[in-house]
Length: 244
Image (cartoon, rainbow, N blue to C red):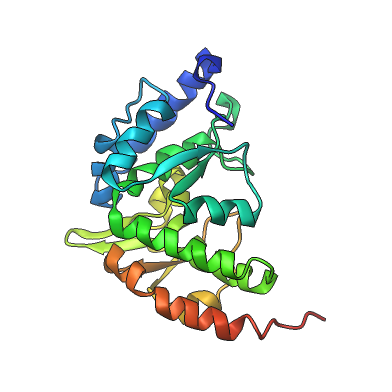
């Protein structure tokens, strides 16, 4: 598949601009510095939907990664194989103006605006790549994939990081949501230090704001936790809970 840039409509450009401007007002002081710097590194702006033919050479020159066009959510084998090959799966369709605040399936604003800037951080993409290799190793074990999805969910999608100025957001599920950007740093949810064992024992929901978040100290911490993740998956994947 490929991005058909000429097919974007006037509404598509309006949607991108509205969402981009709204989040760029919300994110300073809330988003990780690496995300905000990544926006500049890959030349994302309000007035232009990202063109993968321009973004990919930039990304490859920084961390060796690139975007791979997918129609939407893909099965686990494709997802993990792409990222094991340093290719981030990204849809190219945008929500409608009537759907600005919530979608059941992630669109391009989530996949590209919220994920891609952090793909300029080497430790973070190294974590993604190695996590995906673990996924491929256990691709036929549904319980192991569920456990692995919890790590991905509470880090890549809904993770917080402690920086010198305070708690900041690096999870793309938050960075693409105006509401959760504010909520996650409020006094309403619970927050915990990054703990592999605790995350593996924490189910998540997709249909509401999260009620708990996990805090890392650095992107290197994520990468350094991979041996523990692999060890715990090996143990827990053999102990799938029995449902009654």
